[in-house]
Image (cartoon, rainbow, N blue to C red; front, side):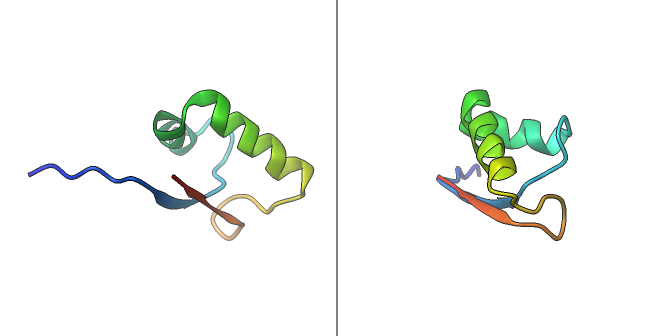
Length: 56
């Protein structure tokens, strides 16, 4: 039985990692690039102990 999610919580992953590609497959490439650009500008923390994002 398959289930589909409508939203999820994830952290800001390492650039060019497979986890970023996974998130981009859900949000679209441009949307995730814009989110990461905003995160860098606002000095969000990245990686395992950094900030998280809610994606819907």
